[in-house]
Image 1 (cartoon, rainbow, N blue to C red):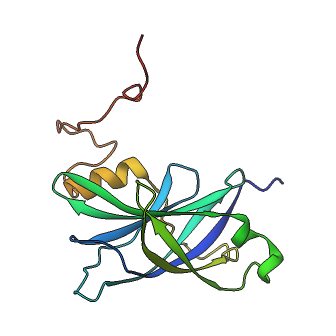
Image 2 (tube, rainbow, N blue to C red; image 1 turned 180 degrees about the horizontal axis):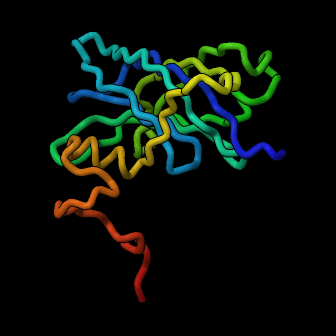
Length: 178
């Protein structure tokens, strides 16, 4: 039996010192279309956001990094505030202790211009395999479906056979056309 993926238990705890004006949430992914999203949190003027959201994220064997991206909701979309890309070996290697031991970490966030924009605090551990009879709640909704749900609510669902219109950007949009 070959190992295809591992599951990490991730708790996004909080964020601080971010330049933010709207509600913010965190998207966590590991080099795949699957991602997990926290609920939104408001800055109450203290420059501190608190999520305390826990979820299970499947990490493909080929994944070399895990990305924590703080975003804020805007009218008809989202705006990225800061990103932290962390080597998966920081969590999956036994260098910092046993894999199933809870590790709390804080990483600096960078905005899309490369400027520092706050710190994110989270904890990670390799999740033990669940007993066969226990159903596990995993957060493995594809990013496209999460984006549509976040922008449109539950009015449009991916794969739903309604007459609703979904606007998207073609995959070749960013390529140089000669």
